[in-house]
Image 1: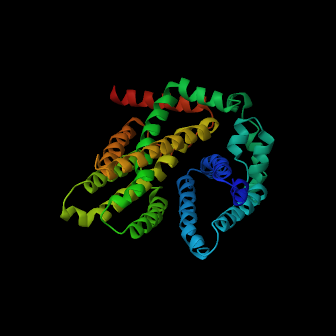
Image 2 (image 1 turned 180 degrees about the vertical axis):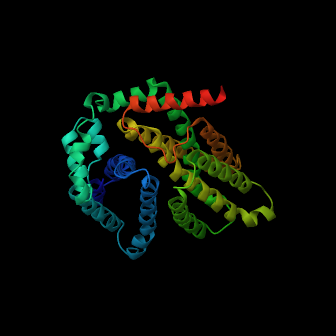
Image 3 (image 1 turned 135 degrees about the vertical axis):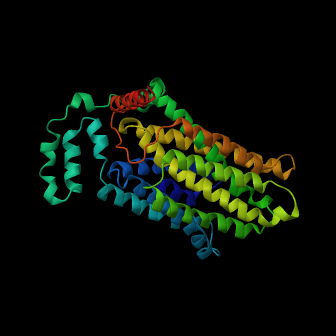
Length: 364
């Protein structure tokens, strides 16, 4: 990602520039998913949500740094922007290579037991590292090894397993609705009766309290209810932005900020929710599919905003209806707060059947 961004400064025409940006975007798309999954698998369930949200907070800080970099280089060529944004990424990738551990869960389900134990020993305090080998000596490899050798077999498992597909489809639908608002709403700020520069700044700043709220409350919030509540709030206030009249025009930016804040919070919680819904052997693929649904929802944002500029439709009204309807699919998902995450499909399936039997016994 960083190397292709750095090479952009040597672009001789729009085609070379576009090709390098395509490579950069292709590489960048996988980083967020891998980073989220890796951090959640390196910690226990007590800190799983908090650590995941800290990544979103750092992303927001990096996003807010771009206007400062652009301001400092306002009198220079655009090529310098790529220098100052790509070099830190190259240095960061070196730090990741030397200091970041591979997920012991991932190593273990791939049958690489010795590497998993070595990673755990490097993480654990010295007083506990000695007992790790003994703790894993009785675990059966045949039961824990995940048999998906490539990404295609992983997707096949997600679709063929009925319980997995019943989880994957709702979270992707929810992701589609959130993505339409998260990516599309900032594009429609020019259609509001408010200063464009201030409204863009306020939207960027609203992601900070969204991350902070999620960090502070993720350990106390039920995932399913939180996603449902924040998508409903975002939908209601987005629809209110579409109301016409001088009275409503005065409150449009406030309503828009509440809607965008709620969508950003739902975005954060949904990704944490997704990592808890699927076992280690398919977690990265499931999270990638949800991210693709988020981006796919964002594809329709520019179209709706362009349609509103021609007085054909109210983009904020559509945003509100879509995220509100998509958010209802959260009722189809099981709650995961405080639950131990599984490593294999069989383990997750066994837990799913046990939960269904418990519910059946209670109803009986």
